[in-house]
Image 1 (cartoon, rainbow, N blue to C red):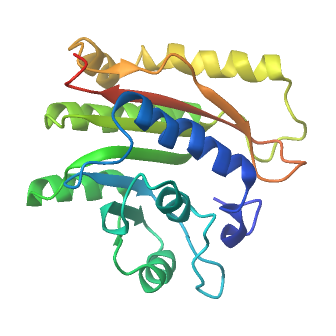
Image 2: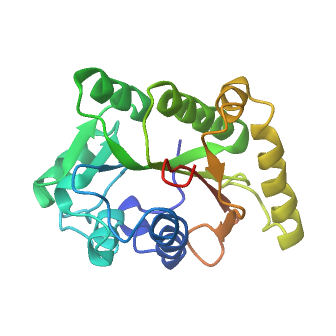
Length: 231
């Protein structure tokens, strides 16, 4: 899929940083605590965390998480299918875990091998909502069926095509975001999980604009969490 922006600069986007603060850092602290427990992990679709010269970017996802104090470098598990991204990230931050694979498949491998213990799973999807809802439902079903406890699933997806000719209105964006909420309830994997009554949803979704002032991309983030201490 072509990108509308140079990847190394994407993570400096203030919209992205604000969204991570609101949907990951603040929400984890609301429902779980100030920092990840020492034995827990942060899993993410990491993409590139450096510039094109391999210099680590403080405004990247890992940089922001480290600056917040919510985790340590070795709790970060970044997964991407692009070998160049993983190599650059590993060279820049060798104490973090960088894994070249499909995100869902890598989590399943980690579980099978006995080293999967997430506190946060960030599904930062480059999908439109139909595919995104299915992927998120699959991940939640996996976490539930494998009896993963005390975990927050953050799901980010696009509600407008990045090649759209115009920016949609706020009312249109809200309607699309609400439509995604309704779509979750029609997915068998999601319904399988939800009927167990072990997960909760943060009552608000988070809408934000894509990178750049003229971007027509709108994104939305939903937060689900399973906290045994609150059940």
